[in-house]
Length: 484
RNA sequence: GGGAUCGUCGUCUAGCUUGGUAUGAUACUAGUCUGGGGGACUAGUGGUCGCAGGUUCAAAUCCUGCCGGUCCCA
Image 1 (cartoon, rainbow, N blue to C red):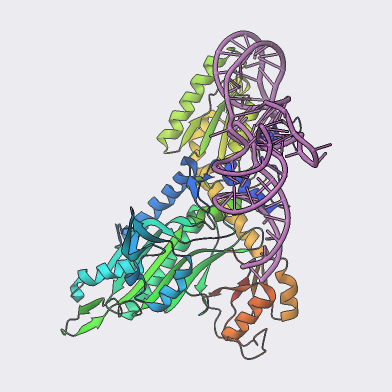
Image 2 (cartoon, chains in turn orange, purple; image 1 turned 60 degrees about the vertical axis):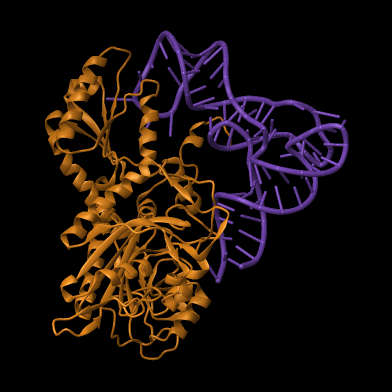
Protein backbone atom coordinates (compact mmCIF):
# COMPACT_ATOMS: atom_id res chain seq x y z
CA UNK A 1 0.00 0.00 0.00
CA UNK A 2 2.54 2.56 1.12
CA UNK A 3 4.98 1.58 -1.58
CA UNK A 4 7.68 3.90 -2.72
CA UNK A 5 5.45 4.91 -5.61
CA UNK A 6 4.02 8.12 -4.28
CA UNK A 7 1.76 8.36 -7.29
CA UNK A 8 -0.54 5.75 -5.82
CA UNK A 9 -1.55 8.06 -3.04
CA UNK A 10 -2.41 10.98 -5.26
CA UNK A 11 -4.50 9.27 -7.89
CA UNK A 12 -7.30 6.74 -7.79
CA UNK A 13 -5.96 3.48 -6.33
CA UNK A 14 -8.76 1.09 -7.29
CA UNK A 15 -10.37 0.29 -10.60
CA UNK A 16 -13.91 1.26 -11.48
CA UNK A 17 -14.64 -2.24 -12.65
CA UNK A 18 -13.38 -4.11 -9.64
CA UNK A 19 -14.33 -1.90 -6.74
CA UNK A 20 -16.99 0.52 -7.90
CA UNK A 21 -18.03 1.78 -4.50
CA UNK A 22 -14.54 2.58 -3.30
CA UNK A 23 -13.73 4.06 -6.71
CA UNK A 24 -16.64 6.48 -6.43
CA UNK A 25 -15.67 7.58 -2.93
CA UNK A 26 -12.08 8.23 -3.99
CA UNK A 27 -13.15 10.27 -7.01
CA UNK A 28 -15.39 12.68 -5.16
CA UNK A 29 -12.74 13.27 -2.50
CA UNK A 30 -9.60 13.33 -4.64
CA UNK A 31 -11.09 15.44 -7.42
CA UNK A 32 -11.94 17.85 -4.59
CA UNK A 33 -15.65 18.03 -5.30
CA UNK A 34 -16.68 17.43 -1.71
CA UNK A 35 -15.39 16.72 1.75
CA UNK A 36 -17.09 15.27 4.80
CA UNK A 37 -18.62 17.62 7.33
CA UNK A 38 -18.20 16.93 11.07
CA UNK A 39 -21.79 15.64 11.31
CA UNK A 40 -22.71 12.20 10.06
CA UNK A 41 -24.30 12.17 6.65
CA UNK A 42 -23.48 15.78 5.80
CA UNK A 43 -20.99 16.90 3.18
CA UNK A 44 -19.30 20.14 2.23
CA UNK A 45 -19.39 21.11 -1.42
CA UNK A 46 -16.08 22.55 -2.60
CA UNK A 47 -15.79 25.06 -5.47
CA UNK A 48 -15.17 22.44 -8.18
CA UNK A 49 -18.27 20.57 -7.07
CA UNK A 50 -20.38 23.63 -6.52
CA UNK A 51 -19.69 25.15 -9.90
CA UNK A 52 -21.14 22.04 -11.57
CA UNK A 53 -24.28 22.64 -9.55
CA UNK A 54 -24.27 26.33 -10.48
CA UNK A 55 -24.02 25.41 -14.13
CA UNK A 56 -27.01 23.08 -13.90
CA UNK A 57 -28.95 25.64 -11.94
CA UNK A 58 -28.43 28.32 -14.52
CA UNK A 59 -29.56 26.01 -17.33
CA UNK A 60 -32.69 25.03 -15.41
CA UNK A 61 -33.42 28.64 -14.51
CA UNK A 62 -33.40 29.63 -18.16
CA UNK A 63 -35.72 26.80 -19.13
CA UNK A 64 -38.03 27.38 -16.17
CA UNK A 65 -38.26 31.09 -16.97
CA UNK A 66 -39.17 30.28 -20.56
CA UNK A 67 -41.99 28.18 -19.17
CA UNK A 68 -43.32 31.01 -16.99
CA UNK A 69 -41.82 29.77 -13.75
CA UNK A 70 -40.21 32.21 -11.35
CA UNK A 71 -37.96 31.61 -8.35
CA UNK A 72 -38.88 32.22 -4.72
CA UNK A 73 -37.48 31.27 -1.35
CA UNK A 74 -39.06 29.40 1.55
CA UNK A 75 -37.84 29.19 5.16
CA UNK A 76 -36.34 25.97 6.47
CA UNK A 77 -38.57 25.43 9.53
CA UNK A 78 -42.05 23.94 9.23
CA UNK A 79 -44.32 23.60 12.27
CA UNK A 80 -45.49 20.06 13.01
CA UNK A 81 -49.13 21.05 12.71
CA UNK A 82 -48.56 22.05 9.09
CA UNK A 83 -46.44 19.08 8.12
CA UNK A 84 -49.11 16.78 9.53
CA UNK A 85 -52.00 18.30 7.61
CA UNK A 86 -51.86 15.75 4.79
CA UNK A 87 -51.64 12.47 6.68
CA UNK A 88 -50.12 10.07 4.17
CA UNK A 89 -47.54 12.69 3.33
CA UNK A 90 -46.67 13.07 7.01
CA UNK A 91 -46.51 9.35 7.67
CA UNK A 92 -44.17 8.93 4.72
CA UNK A 93 -41.69 11.57 5.78
CA UNK A 94 -41.92 11.44 9.57
CA UNK A 95 -39.31 8.70 10.15
CA UNK A 96 -36.58 10.82 8.63
CA UNK A 97 -37.49 14.29 9.84
CA UNK A 98 -35.07 16.30 11.98
CA UNK A 99 -37.01 18.14 14.66
CA UNK A 100 -36.12 21.41 16.33
CA UNK A 101 -37.43 21.27 19.88
CA UNK A 102 -35.63 24.14 21.57
CA UNK A 103 -34.79 27.76 21.01
CA UNK A 104 -31.94 28.50 23.37
CA UNK A 105 -32.91 26.86 26.65
CA UNK A 106 -36.65 27.08 26.06
CA UNK A 107 -38.73 24.36 24.59
CA UNK A 108 -40.68 25.48 21.54
CA UNK A 109 -44.45 25.03 21.58
CA UNK A 110 -45.12 23.31 18.29
CA UNK A 111 -42.11 21.20 17.28
CA UNK A 112 -40.42 22.55 14.16
CA UNK A 113 -39.34 20.30 11.31
CA UNK A 114 -36.27 21.02 9.21
CA UNK A 115 -37.99 20.77 5.85
CA UNK A 116 -37.89 17.34 4.28
CA UNK A 117 -39.85 18.93 1.40
CA UNK A 118 -41.95 22.06 1.26
CA UNK A 119 -45.39 21.18 -0.08
CA UNK A 120 -47.17 21.93 3.19
CA UNK A 121 -45.44 25.25 3.69
CA UNK A 122 -45.71 26.37 0.10
CA UNK A 123 -49.41 25.56 -0.09
CA UNK A 124 -50.19 27.35 3.14
CA UNK A 125 -48.78 30.43 1.45
CA UNK A 126 -50.44 29.68 -1.87
CA UNK A 127 -53.83 29.51 -0.16
CA UNK A 128 -53.32 33.11 0.94
CA UNK A 129 -52.17 34.29 -2.47
CA UNK A 130 -54.86 32.72 -4.63
CA UNK A 131 -58.43 33.93 -4.77
CA UNK A 132 -59.45 34.05 -8.40
CA UNK A 133 -58.88 32.13 -11.61
CA UNK A 134 -57.02 35.29 -12.63
CA UNK A 135 -54.31 34.40 -10.08
CA UNK A 136 -53.61 31.12 -11.91
CA UNK A 137 -51.55 29.43 -13.02
CA UNK A 138 -49.15 30.10 -10.18
CA UNK A 139 -45.74 28.62 -10.89
CA UNK A 140 -42.86 29.06 -8.45
CA UNK A 141 -39.59 27.22 -8.12
CA UNK A 142 -37.46 27.14 -4.97
CA UNK A 143 -33.70 26.49 -4.84
CA UNK A 144 -32.89 25.28 -1.37
CA UNK A 145 -31.84 22.25 0.62
CA UNK A 146 -33.97 19.51 2.08
CA UNK A 147 -33.15 17.48 5.17
CA UNK A 148 -33.96 13.82 5.54
CA UNK A 149 -32.10 11.86 8.18
CA UNK A 150 -30.05 9.09 6.65
CA UNK A 151 -28.91 6.81 9.43
CA UNK A 152 -26.82 4.42 7.38
CA UNK A 153 -25.13 3.95 4.03
CA UNK A 154 -24.56 7.59 3.22
CA UNK A 155 -22.74 8.46 0.03
CA UNK A 156 -21.74 11.90 -1.24
CA UNK A 157 -24.37 13.25 -3.68
CA UNK A 158 -26.38 10.02 -3.68
CA UNK A 159 -27.54 9.67 -0.12
CA UNK A 160 -26.92 12.41 2.41
CA UNK A 161 -28.97 13.84 5.24
CA UNK A 162 -29.07 17.25 3.63
CA UNK A 163 -29.11 17.80 -0.10
CA UNK A 164 -29.21 20.68 -2.53
CA UNK A 165 -32.18 20.62 -4.87
CA UNK A 166 -34.88 22.63 -6.47
CA UNK A 167 -38.53 22.05 -5.76
CA UNK A 168 -41.13 23.50 -8.05
CA UNK A 169 -44.76 23.96 -7.06
CA UNK A 170 -47.45 24.93 -9.53
CA UNK A 171 -51.17 25.53 -9.22
CA UNK A 172 -53.72 25.31 -12.03
CA UNK A 173 -57.42 25.78 -12.69
CA UNK A 174 -57.90 22.46 -14.45
CA UNK A 175 -56.67 18.92 -14.17
CA UNK A 176 -55.64 18.89 -17.83
CA UNK A 177 -53.47 21.95 -17.45
CA UNK A 178 -51.78 20.57 -14.33
CA UNK A 179 -51.07 17.24 -15.98
CA UNK A 180 -49.61 19.00 -18.98
CA UNK A 181 -47.30 20.89 -16.65
CA UNK A 182 -46.15 17.64 -15.06
CA UNK A 183 -45.12 16.37 -18.48
CA UNK A 184 -43.58 19.67 -19.55
CA UNK A 185 -41.31 19.66 -16.53
CA UNK A 186 -40.33 16.03 -17.03
CA UNK A 187 -39.38 16.95 -20.59
CA UNK A 188 -37.21 19.83 -19.36
CA UNK A 189 -35.54 17.48 -16.89
CA UNK A 190 -34.88 14.87 -19.54
CA UNK A 191 -33.35 17.13 -22.13
CA UNK A 192 -31.27 18.99 -19.58
CA UNK A 193 -29.79 15.82 -18.12
CA UNK A 194 -29.09 14.39 -21.55
CA UNK A 195 -27.72 17.57 -23.10
CA UNK A 196 -25.76 18.95 -20.14
CA UNK A 197 -24.65 15.85 -18.27
CA UNK A 198 -24.65 13.43 -21.20
CA UNK A 199 -26.60 10.85 -19.21
CA UNK A 200 -29.43 9.06 -21.04
CA UNK A 201 -32.67 8.69 -19.08
CA UNK A 202 -35.84 6.66 -19.37
CA UNK A 203 -39.04 8.49 -18.51
CA UNK A 204 -42.33 7.07 -17.34
CA UNK A 205 -44.49 6.59 -14.27
CA UNK A 206 -43.73 5.22 -10.84
CA UNK A 207 -45.85 2.36 -9.54
CA UNK A 208 -48.44 3.10 -6.83
CA UNK A 209 -46.03 1.66 -4.28
CA UNK A 210 -43.13 3.86 -5.34
CA UNK A 211 -44.95 7.11 -6.01
CA UNK A 212 -44.43 10.29 -3.97
CA UNK A 213 -46.47 10.13 -0.78
CA UNK A 214 -49.42 12.42 -1.29
CA UNK A 215 -49.31 12.44 -5.10
CA UNK A 216 -51.97 11.08 -7.43
CA UNK A 217 -49.15 9.80 -9.56
CA UNK A 218 -45.44 10.37 -10.00
CA UNK A 219 -43.53 10.61 -13.25
CA UNK A 220 -39.83 9.91 -13.11
CA UNK A 221 -36.64 9.69 -15.09
CA UNK A 222 -34.31 6.82 -14.34
CA UNK A 223 -30.76 6.05 -15.42
CA UNK A 224 -28.69 2.94 -15.33
CA UNK A 225 -25.30 3.24 -13.70
CA UNK A 226 -22.20 1.33 -14.85
CA UNK A 227 -22.44 -1.01 -11.84
CA UNK A 228 -25.89 -2.08 -13.00
CA UNK A 229 -27.86 -0.20 -10.37
CA UNK A 230 -30.62 2.26 -11.21
CA UNK A 231 -30.49 5.89 -10.18
CA UNK A 232 -33.61 8.04 -9.92
CA UNK A 233 -32.61 11.30 -11.58
CA UNK A 234 -35.69 13.40 -10.98
CA UNK A 235 -39.42 13.26 -10.40
CA UNK A 236 -42.44 15.33 -11.41
CA UNK A 237 -45.65 14.73 -9.48
CA UNK A 238 -49.31 15.24 -10.27
CA UNK A 239 -50.83 16.10 -6.91
CA UNK A 240 -54.41 16.40 -8.10
CA UNK A 241 -56.41 18.02 -5.32
CA UNK A 242 -54.78 15.97 -2.58
CA UNK A 243 -53.11 19.03 -1.11
CA UNK A 244 -55.44 21.76 -2.30
CA UNK A 245 -58.25 20.31 -0.19
CA UNK A 246 -56.54 20.13 3.22
CA UNK A 247 -54.68 23.39 2.57
CA UNK A 248 -57.71 25.07 1.02
CA UNK A 249 -55.97 26.22 -2.11
CA UNK A 250 -59.17 27.49 -3.74
CA UNK A 251 -60.10 29.90 -6.47
CA UNK A 252 -63.29 31.51 -7.75
CA UNK A 253 -63.84 30.50 -11.34
CA UNK A 254 -65.36 32.66 -14.06
CA UNK A 255 -68.84 31.55 -13.00
CA UNK A 256 -68.00 32.69 -9.45
CA UNK A 257 -68.09 29.15 -8.08
CA UNK A 258 -65.26 28.20 -5.73
CA UNK A 259 -63.06 25.25 -6.80
CA UNK A 260 -60.12 23.44 -5.32
CA UNK A 261 -57.09 23.95 -7.49
CA UNK A 262 -55.03 21.31 -9.30
CA UNK A 263 -51.37 21.08 -8.35
CA UNK A 264 -47.98 19.74 -9.32
CA UNK A 265 -44.62 19.48 -7.62
CA UNK A 266 -41.27 18.39 -9.00
CA UNK A 267 -37.59 18.29 -8.13
CA UNK A 268 -34.07 17.34 -9.05
CA UNK A 269 -31.15 17.27 -6.65
CA UNK A 270 -27.37 17.20 -6.64
CA UNK A 271 -27.80 13.47 -7.06
CA UNK A 272 -27.48 14.36 -10.75
CA UNK A 273 -23.83 15.15 -10.08
CA UNK A 274 -23.39 11.71 -8.53
CA UNK A 275 -24.92 10.17 -11.63
CA UNK A 276 -22.56 12.12 -13.85
CA UNK A 277 -19.51 10.98 -11.88
CA UNK A 278 -20.53 7.33 -12.05
CA UNK A 279 -21.50 7.43 -15.70
CA UNK A 280 -18.39 9.07 -17.11
CA UNK A 281 -15.55 8.64 -14.63
CA UNK A 282 -12.70 6.19 -15.26
CA UNK A 283 -9.64 4.78 -13.52
CA UNK A 284 -7.76 8.07 -13.98
CA UNK A 285 -10.49 9.99 -12.22
CA UNK A 286 -13.35 12.29 -13.01
CA UNK A 287 -14.50 12.91 -16.59
CA UNK A 288 -16.58 16.04 -17.04
CA UNK A 289 -18.89 16.80 -19.95
CA UNK A 290 -17.68 20.12 -21.45
CA UNK A 291 -20.97 21.92 -20.89
CA UNK A 292 -20.78 21.66 -17.11
CA UNK A 293 -17.00 21.60 -16.65
CA UNK A 294 -15.73 24.51 -14.51
CA UNK A 295 -12.59 24.45 -16.67
CA UNK A 296 -13.14 23.22 -20.22
CA UNK A 297 -9.61 23.51 -21.54
CA UNK A 298 -6.37 23.44 -19.60
CA UNK A 299 -3.17 24.60 -21.27
CA UNK A 300 0.13 23.13 -20.15
CA UNK A 301 3.17 25.05 -21.34
CA UNK A 302 6.35 23.01 -21.68
CA UNK A 303 9.80 24.52 -21.89
CA UNK A 304 13.40 23.78 -21.13
CA UNK A 305 14.98 26.09 -18.64
CA UNK A 306 14.40 29.56 -20.11
CA UNK A 307 15.37 28.35 -23.56
CA UNK A 308 12.35 29.09 -25.67
CA UNK A 309 10.34 29.88 -22.57
CA UNK A 310 9.37 33.34 -23.70
CA UNK A 311 8.17 32.09 -27.06
CA UNK A 312 6.09 29.33 -25.51
CA UNK A 313 4.53 31.57 -22.92
CA UNK A 314 3.59 34.28 -25.35
CA UNK A 315 1.99 31.73 -27.68
CA UNK A 316 0.13 30.23 -24.73
CA UNK A 317 -1.19 33.65 -23.82
CA UNK A 318 -2.32 34.19 -27.38
CA UNK A 319 -4.17 30.86 -27.50
CA UNK A 320 -5.75 31.53 -24.15
CA UNK A 321 -7.15 34.83 -25.37
CA UNK A 322 -8.42 33.27 -28.58
CA UNK A 323 -10.28 30.61 -26.65
CA UNK A 324 -11.64 33.05 -24.11
CA UNK A 325 -13.05 35.22 -26.83
CA UNK A 326 -14.92 32.13 -28.02
CA UNK A 327 -16.45 31.84 -24.51
CA UNK A 328 -14.39 28.82 -23.56
CA UNK A 329 -13.41 28.44 -19.93
CA UNK A 330 -9.60 28.16 -20.05
CA UNK A 331 -6.94 27.68 -17.43
CA UNK A 332 -3.19 27.94 -17.97
CA UNK A 333 -1.24 25.69 -15.60
CA UNK A 334 1.95 27.70 -15.19
CA UNK A 335 2.98 26.15 -11.90
CA UNK A 336 6.75 26.08 -12.24
CA UNK A 337 7.41 23.59 -9.46
CA UNK A 338 5.58 20.72 -11.17
CA UNK A 339 6.61 18.60 -14.11
CA UNK A 340 4.36 18.36 -17.18
CA UNK A 341 3.69 14.69 -16.42
CA UNK A 342 2.40 15.53 -12.98
CA UNK A 343 0.11 18.16 -14.42
CA UNK A 344 -1.31 15.76 -17.01
CA UNK A 345 -2.31 13.35 -14.28
CA UNK A 346 -3.57 16.07 -12.02
CA UNK A 347 -5.98 17.53 -14.56
CA UNK A 348 -7.10 14.10 -15.65
CA UNK A 349 -8.02 13.34 -12.07
CA UNK A 350 -10.08 16.53 -12.06
CA UNK A 351 -11.82 15.61 -15.29
CA UNK A 352 -11.01 18.61 -17.49
CA UNK A 353 -12.43 17.67 -20.93
CA UNK A 354 -9.57 18.91 -23.08
CA UNK A 355 -5.86 19.47 -22.49
CA UNK A 356 -3.52 21.48 -24.68
CA UNK A 357 0.21 20.80 -24.58
CA UNK A 358 2.53 23.33 -26.14
CA UNK A 359 6.32 23.37 -26.12
CA UNK A 360 9.28 24.39 -28.29
CA UNK A 361 8.75 21.44 -30.66
CA UNK A 362 5.18 22.52 -31.28
CA UNK A 363 6.12 26.13 -31.86
CA UNK A 364 8.51 24.90 -34.52
CA UNK A 365 5.79 22.83 -36.17
CA UNK A 366 3.21 25.59 -35.80
CA UNK A 367 0.86 23.25 -34.00
CA UNK A 368 -0.33 22.15 -30.58
CA UNK A 369 -1.12 18.81 -29.00
CA UNK A 370 -4.68 18.29 -27.82
CA UNK A 371 -5.69 15.42 -25.55
CA UNK A 372 -9.31 14.49 -25.00
CA UNK A 373 -10.16 13.35 -21.53
CA UNK A 374 -13.10 11.05 -22.26
CA UNK A 375 -11.31 8.74 -24.73
CA UNK A 376 -7.64 9.54 -24.10
CA UNK A 377 -7.17 10.50 -27.74
CA UNK A 378 -4.09 12.62 -28.35
CA UNK A 379 -3.69 14.48 -31.65
CA UNK A 380 -2.00 17.54 -33.01
CA UNK A 381 -3.77 20.63 -34.24
CA UNK A 382 -2.31 23.40 -36.39
CA UNK A 383 -2.21 26.96 -35.05
CA UNK A 384 -4.62 27.96 -37.78
CA UNK A 385 -7.20 25.44 -36.59
CA UNK A 386 -7.49 26.67 -33.04
CA UNK A 387 -10.74 28.39 -33.97
CA UNK A 388 -12.29 24.93 -34.21
CA UNK A 389 -12.10 24.44 -30.47
CA UNK A 390 -15.80 25.12 -29.73
CA UNK A 391 -16.71 22.50 -32.34
CA UNK A 392 -14.32 20.02 -30.81
CA UNK A 393 -15.87 20.57 -27.38
CA UNK A 394 -19.34 20.07 -28.81
CA UNK A 395 -18.24 16.84 -30.41
CA UNK A 396 -16.87 15.63 -27.10
CA UNK A 397 -20.18 16.44 -25.45
CA UNK A 398 -22.14 14.55 -28.10
CA UNK A 399 -19.83 11.57 -28.11
CA UNK A 400 -20.01 11.26 -24.37
CA UNK A 401 -23.79 10.97 -24.61
CA UNK A 402 -23.50 8.46 -27.43
CA UNK A 403 -21.06 6.40 -25.41
CA UNK A 404 -23.27 6.36 -22.32
CA UNK A 405 -26.33 5.56 -24.44
CA UNK A 406 -24.54 2.48 -25.72
CA UNK A 407 -23.62 1.54 -22.18
CA UNK A 408 -27.21 1.72 -21.01
CA UNK A 409 -28.47 -0.17 -24.01
CA UNK A 410 -26.03 -2.95 -23.23
CA UNK A 411 -27.34 -3.01 -19.69
CA UNK A 412 -31.01 -3.30 -20.68
CA UNK A 413 -32.73 -6.63 -21.28
CA UNK A 414 -36.22 -7.85 -22.05
CA UNK A 415 -37.11 -10.76 -19.80
CA UNK A 416 -40.48 -12.47 -19.55
CA UNK A 417 -39.50 -15.53 -17.57
CA UNK A 418 -39.14 -15.20 -13.80
CA UNK A 419 -36.47 -17.88 -13.45
CA UNK A 420 -34.45 -16.06 -16.05
CA UNK A 421 -35.20 -12.79 -14.29
CA UNK A 422 -33.78 -13.99 -10.98
CA UNK A 423 -30.63 -15.08 -12.74
CA UNK A 424 -30.12 -11.88 -14.72
CA UNK A 425 -30.88 -9.48 -11.89
CA UNK A 426 -27.72 -10.69 -10.16
CA UNK A 427 -25.73 -9.12 -12.96
CA UNK A 428 -27.58 -5.82 -12.54
CA UNK A 429 -29.11 -3.69 -15.25
CA UNK A 430 -32.57 -2.67 -16.40
CA UNK A 431 -34.91 -5.61 -16.89
CA UNK A 432 -38.04 -4.89 -18.93
CA UNK A 433 -40.53 -7.45 -17.69
CA UNK A 434 -44.31 -7.79 -17.95
CA UNK A 435 -46.36 -7.16 -14.81
CA UNK A 436 -50.04 -7.57 -13.96
CA UNK A 437 -50.25 -4.32 -12.01
CA UNK A 438 -50.86 -6.03 -8.67
CA UNK A 439 -48.79 -4.47 -5.86
CA UNK A 440 -48.55 -7.91 -4.29
CA UNK A 441 -46.57 -9.29 -7.21
CA UNK A 442 -44.40 -6.17 -7.10
CA UNK A 443 -43.75 -6.72 -3.40
CA UNK A 444 -42.95 -10.41 -3.82
CA UNK A 445 -40.51 -9.68 -6.64
CA UNK A 446 -38.84 -7.07 -4.47
CA UNK A 447 -38.59 -9.50 -1.57
CA UNK A 448 -37.23 -12.35 -3.64
CA UNK A 449 -34.83 -10.45 -5.89
CA UNK A 450 -34.15 -7.05 -4.34
CA UNK A 451 -35.36 -5.40 -7.53
CA UNK A 452 -38.22 -2.94 -7.61
CA UNK A 453 -40.14 -1.15 -10.30
CA UNK A 454 -38.02 1.85 -11.20
CA UNK A 455 -40.24 3.19 -13.94
CA UNK A 456 -43.13 2.15 -16.12
CA UNK A 457 -41.95 3.64 -19.41
CA UNK A 458 -44.45 5.68 -21.40
CA UNK A 459 -45.85 3.51 -24.14
CA UNK A 460 -45.19 0.24 -22.34
CA UNK A 461 -48.81 -0.11 -21.22
CA UNK A 462 -51.38 -2.50 -22.71
CA UNK A 463 -49.29 -5.52 -23.48
CA UNK A 464 -50.41 -8.93 -24.63
CA UNK A 465 -47.94 -10.65 -22.34
CA UNK A 466 -48.43 -12.48 -19.07
CA UNK A 467 -47.16 -11.17 -15.72
CA UNK A 468 -43.81 -12.83 -15.18
CA UNK A 469 -44.68 -13.53 -11.56
CA UNK A 470 -48.34 -14.64 -11.47
CA UNK A 471 -48.95 -15.36 -15.16
CA UNK A 472 -52.10 -13.22 -15.24
CA UNK A 473 -52.66 -10.77 -18.07
CA UNK A 474 -50.07 -8.00 -17.75
CA UNK A 475 -50.91 -4.31 -17.90
CA UNK A 476 -47.46 -2.93 -18.60
CA UNK A 477 -43.79 -3.73 -19.02
CA UNK A 478 -41.99 -1.81 -16.28
CA UNK A 479 -38.27 -1.55 -15.81
CA UNK A 480 -37.16 -3.56 -12.80
CA UNK A 481 -33.77 -2.96 -11.24
CA UNK A 482 -31.93 -2.74 -7.99
CA UNK A 483 -31.59 0.87 -7.10
CA UNK A 484 -29.52 3.37 -5.17
C1' G B 1 -32.97 -3.00 9.38
C1' G B 2 -28.58 -6.92 9.90
C1' G B 3 -23.26 -7.69 9.71
C1' A B 4 -17.96 -6.53 9.19
C1' U B 5 -14.10 -3.14 9.60
C1' C B 6 -11.32 1.28 10.50
C1' G B 7 -9.71 6.27 12.92
C1' U B 8 -1.75 8.13 14.41
C1' C B 9 1.34 15.35 10.78
C1' G B 10 -2.41 17.75 4.65
C1' U B 11 -2.25 12.32 2.64
C1' C B 12 -0.66 7.16 3.17
C1' U B 13 1.58 4.64 7.14
C1' A B 14 5.08 1.95 11.44
C1' G B 15 4.37 1.43 16.56
C1' C B 16 -0.62 -1.44 19.82
C1' U B 17 -0.23 -8.33 21.17
C1' U B 18 4.03 -7.52 25.80
C1' G B 19 2.12 0.49 28.58
C1' G B 20 7.81 4.32 29.16
C1' U B 21 5.91 10.60 25.22
C1' A B 22 5.63 8.46 17.71
C1' U B 23 8.47 5.64 12.44
C1' G B 24 8.92 6.24 7.35
C1' A B 25 7.22 8.00 2.74
C1' U B 26 4.74 11.73 0.25
C1' A B 27 3.01 16.58 0.43
C1' C B 28 4.40 21.55 2.19
C1' U B 29 8.48 25.88 2.70
C1' A B 30 13.46 27.80 0.76
C1' G B 31 17.29 27.19 -2.86
C1' U B 32 19.85 24.97 -7.14
C1' C B 33 19.38 21.92 -11.21
C1' U B 34 15.31 20.18 -14.19
C1' G B 35 10.90 20.09 -17.54
C1' G B 36 7.12 16.14 -23.94
C1' G B 37 3.24 11.11 -18.73
C1' G B 38 3.18 11.50 -11.36
C1' G B 39 11.76 14.59 -11.68
C1' A B 40 16.78 15.10 -8.58
C1' C B 41 19.66 17.04 -4.60
C1' U B 42 20.31 20.01 -0.03
C1' A B 43 18.16 22.28 4.21
C1' G B 44 13.69 23.08 6.99
C1' U B 45 8.27 23.20 8.86
C1' G B 46 4.46 20.16 10.51
C1' G B 47 1.33 15.31 15.05
C1' U B 48 -3.17 17.71 22.18
C1' C B 49 -2.20 9.63 18.30
C1' G B 50 -10.97 11.00 16.56
C1' C B 51 -13.40 12.82 21.49
C1' A B 52 -14.52 12.04 26.79
C1' G B 53 -13.88 9.27 30.99
C1' G B 54 -11.37 5.10 33.63
C1' U B 55 -7.03 1.84 35.18
C1' U B 56 -1.71 3.12 36.14
C1' C B 57 4.05 6.19 38.83
C1' A B 58 3.31 6.34 33.41
C1' A B 59 -1.65 5.35 27.98
C1' A B 60 -1.22 5.98 20.75
C1' U B 61 -0.96 1.12 23.27
C1' C B 62 -5.37 -1.72 28.32
C1' C B 63 -11.02 -0.82 29.72
C1' U B 64 -15.89 1.89 28.99
C1' G B 65 -18.86 5.30 26.45
C1' C B 66 -19.45 8.57 22.47
C1' C B 67 -18.33 10.78 17.53
C1' G B 68 -16.97 9.89 12.55
C1' G B 69 -15.49 7.01 7.99
C1' U B 70 -15.65 2.64 4.78
C1' C B 71 -17.49 -2.01 2.87
C1' C B 72 -21.08 -6.18 2.46
C1' C B 73 -26.16 -8.10 2.91
C1' A B 74 -31.83 -7.07 3.35
